[in-house]
Image (cartoon, rainbow, N blue to C red; front, top):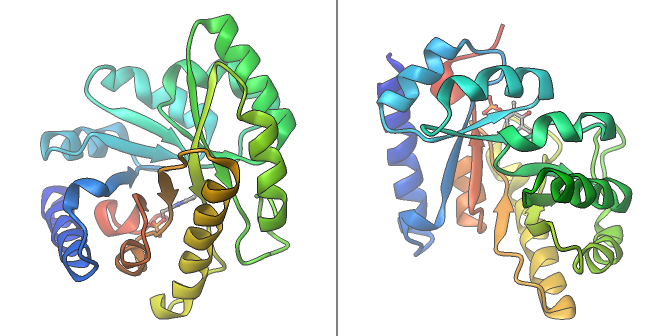
Length: 226
Ligand SMILES: *Cc1c(COP(=O)(O)O)cnc(C)c1O
């Protein structure tokens, strides 16, 4: 199947999940995860109408983005090291992986120096998985309140990568937990926190039913990675 065909299948599945959940399609942003895939495949997806792409490595993101300036937006969905902030910020739409107050302070400072505003999501390790990056759920509130006053950094919500389970229903409770965490944080901090980045190729429908506003879908669009 072509990338255009795969994209329209994913689009249909997104629309059906929105319908089931009583949501409108416009509430969910599809980020096509193009990591490890060549720019020719990104160009095909753009030709089919896709505008948002996700990369997990800074080096790869900054190599690909300039080829599509003005046509596409690139999201950083992998871990961000402090010494790469300056390089990546001008090329990156949203950093999905903010996981410490220190990183937030540096993002804010460097965004100011570059004359940009940085957009980010707090990565929460909702399954409390030792192997993953991300804040423990109980750490999220103190980080949010300490970064809220920063002028050049906008924290727009939460992101999670739950523990992998081939059965999407098994991940439903983790998606729900992230939404409930966000709802509680919103209430206690008064921050807007509109975004929930959750759901990948095999479980984005369940994530949408549980409130995802951004889904990150790679292999279902571009095929398996080698
Ligand atoms: C690779 C990746 C995805 C996409 O995974 P697929 O299973 O290919 O859809 C989503 N989110 C993150 C953080 C990733 O690293």
